[in-house]
Structure formats: structure tokens, C-alpha cells
Image (cartoon, rainbow, N blue to C red; front, side):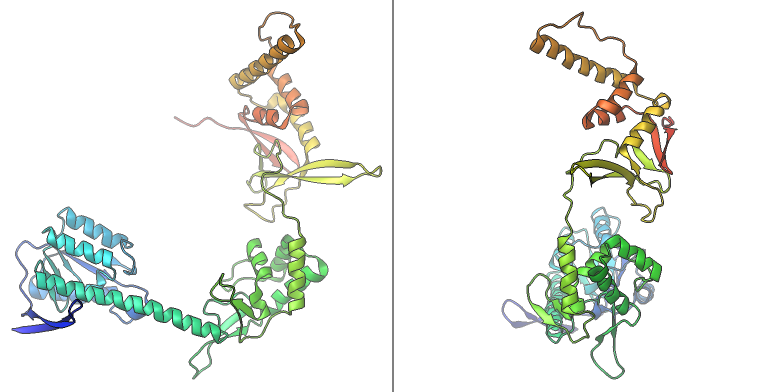
Length: 455
């Protein structure tokens, strides 16, 4: 009988584990064939999923193994309980659907302590009777479970060492002037024939455009949206051919990589000079940063507009937002204007023009007869308004007249009053009573009654 020899981690001594010929499967074992392929570098040389299945299926026919089901998974086994197919397999074993596993090697099942402990627990509970690989079989036997734990622990040790080695290699490459991440737009990564290391070179198509983008901001005062329109006009695109977004433009304008320096690791405060050609000069970069920092940031939620939640853009279907603009008059006073426009969330080039708030209210007053209002909500609002007025007349002025009874009021007249004289909160309360959908199309309001949901 052949024996397998391994070292005990606790006592650093040799332990001989009997290994006989491949045992015949026990009657009543229901195997699930589990094949896994990870994208980790060391596992790229392992057999592919289909190759694993072909080899293990052939072995199953040879040894008379009943394979109930075949399950495939492409996921790393480094993290515990992170594989959905494997987690379902363990659940099915607990429920008695399977009681044996067929796989190519032990490291296909576990490369971490959590999943390994679950496997051994299932064996201890008598739910998992056997794990069979292409060269070994593990049953609920102390020596075989011990060997299984050693092999899976060895796989975890390799993972841990690999992570340390990769970080050390990335640090060394970074200190040599090569940032070990994808280069930003404007640069390409290339490798010359016969050389070991890749290098970063300027992208002949995108690099000059990015430098021109900096110059447009520094010397011509281009805004982010103006740059976005310019990039679409000149056909600037990402490596995958996608249009750059507004947020990408601002990230490029803030990226010191174009200066020839980078921070590694990110947030460490350690700046390294790269071994590639800088795209722009420091003076140009600093001027762009100064202009970006000088642009006033508008704090969120400081402005409250009445009709922003009421309308929908008729051109692209997005919402409608508002912005405030102030005009200095000849006498030195300031005139405030509010404009409502499309949010451009669905189409940044939406052609729908903006409309001033006073003209918006004027159109609403003209169409108030066609709006569908929630009668009960209007009555409730009127009752609250009347109650507040009665308390003021009786409690403050001391001469409330007439009965304390809500008079009959035309709800459309009341709506007109709120649109012209009401506060922002009162206008919002009125909008909550609308059953009609208002669309802003070509600077004109249109009504669309919202149909009740079908039962």
C-alpha cells in the first residue's frame, strides 16, 4: 500500500497518511460535479471549465460514479462565501440533494479558511460523505480530512504570498516611474519587442486634444459644458469609442498625471516623477486649477422653487429645474429673475428653451380652467386657511364677524390666488392637488390628464 508523506505544521514532523488504490464509490452516493475557473494569474494555466468536466466525467464513467448534476462557476475562491453557485451547492448538500462532490482538485473548492471549515463541518455532520478529485479521495476519516485541510491551506498560503508579491512588484514599478494602473486618456501603454517591461507613451490622437482642452480653459475661459460641446464637435472619444462625460472632463482637468507626476499609493501623499513625457506644463496646469477653484460652488438645497416638481420636458422627457439670475439695473437696484429649464439628465443637448417664472405663471393662470384639481385636497387646504384666519381675527383683533363656518369658495379662484399671491410652500401645496400632468414644450405649457391605473 502506498503512503503519502506530509509535515505537521504544529510539530514540524513527518506524518505518513496511507493512500491505497482509488477506492470504489460507495453505494448510494449522489455526486455533484463542480468545475470552477478563476481569473487569477496562477489559475490561468489550470484546465478550463469544459476540460475539467470532460476529464471528471470520463473518470466517473470509468469508476461507476453517479453524477447527478454538473455545476459550473467562474469566480475566485479567495473570499469566503463569495461564490453563488458554490454556496447553493453547500445548501443542497445540507438539504440532502447531494452527499458527495466530484471536482478536479481540492483548490477548486476552497482557497480560504471559511469555505474549508464549512466542508469539514458537513463531513463531521455526516451530510458530505466523500470528495473525489482526479488523484485523491477524501472521506469522513481523520487522516483524509487532515490531508484535505493541508492541501486547501496550502492554496490559501499561495494566495497570501501572491498578494504580498504583487504589492511589492507594484511598489517597485511605481518607484521606477511607471504607475501600475491604467493610464488616463491621452496616453497609451505599449511594449517593445524583446523588452520585459511595458512603457507609457503619448497618444498621438487624444494627447494633443487634451492639451488643447487645458489651453481653452486657461486662455479662453471655456466652461465644462462648453468643453463638452467642443469635444463632441472635434470627435473626441474614449478608447472604447464612447463620448466623454462632463464628470470625466473635470477629472481630466484635475489630473496631475498630465504633469508627469503621480501619487502612489493614492492618498499616501507620496508623489513620484514618471518616466513618460509630460503632456502639459506646470504653469498651464496651475492656471487651470486656479480658474476651477475660483468658480463659485453652489451649495445644494439653498434655493427653493415652487414649480420644479410640476412639469416634464416635452422634448426629452426629463424633469424641469430652475435657476436664479440677478440683473443690476441703472439705478443700482438688483432685479431677480427665475428661469425654468430642462434638467438635461436624459439628453445633455436637449433643445428645449428656458421660460421665465412670471411668464410661466401667466400661462398657468390662462389654463387654470383646464386643470384637473383634487377637490378634497382643495377643501382641506381652504379649511386650514379659514381656521388660521378665524383665530387671528378672534384672538388678535378681537372682532371676528359672522358664524365660524367655511364659506363656499370657487376652487379655481383660490388656485389663481395662490399662483399670484401665495408663498412657495402654498404653491407647492397647490401643485400637490393637481391631477393633470403639465408638459413644457417649445416654451409653452401643455396639459395631459393622468389616467387612473387599471384595476
